[in-house]
Length: 316
Ligand code: ADP
Ligand code: MG
Image (tube, rainbow, N blue to C red; front, side):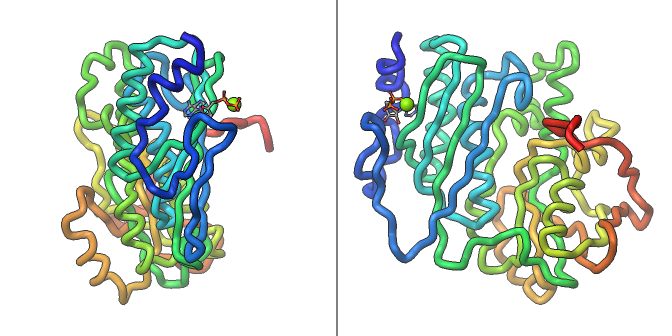
């Protein structure tokens, strides 16, 4: 199968038909109609075998995941997804693999009405790069730098669950138990797109948690020129079968949950909004001035020892 047949068979014409796509897959570039009353929000993420997922990850999970991690970035900006491109590097063109990959990809794309409008297909080590385009009303994108002194910090979902899933998969024989919640959470992260968009009007700053709470909370607050007192007593943790649930929440990656700051007087509105969400939303801290973020659980300092994942740890 050459790459043109491959694209035709698995990727072209499968998109959510959006009437703002004037030229989609098949020309030198895609052409979309932009609404002049909105701002464009763009993000790119790559996932590579061996770095972001272990060999043997099911293709439908990869199709889902490469789009999910990007939708999560749009969610964190409170943006509405519109269009995406997919650059695929494959060791070989295996029809069964591609069919399953496309099933995972388009199931998620359909759910959020995002259209695949182009990409690239090459032979090489297994990796996928997706670029997403979204939109917000002018000035409505939620950035990391908007947190204010005294804002409360919240997180969605169960941080650490995906890292627990990955840990499980990497244990000998672990993949056999592949239908557990944790493994699904790693394979099929649920981008909080609707939640992120709905939060847009309430929150002052937001980030998606992809590298563990410690790193991402620190990043968010640093951008805002603040620190925080974190109190994790109420955090739902994946306690079943893991003795290191707190460490995984703090240092593990791949959660794709939303962490955001909100002024205390907007909490009733948040509580109304979050009724009916498919995930918990939990208060985990308060912004303050100071040198660094302080982590507590049940009033006692957390064990924050350990290293977060770095792609290039040798760089100072
Ligand atoms: P060009 O050589 O002009 O860059 P390509 O031969 O790479 O075009 O791709 C042909 C068409 O197929 C283009 O519209 C491109 O955007 C699209 N395309 C290629 N690979 C993919 C893919 N994996 N998913 C979606 N569209 C793709
Ligand atoms: Mg090309």
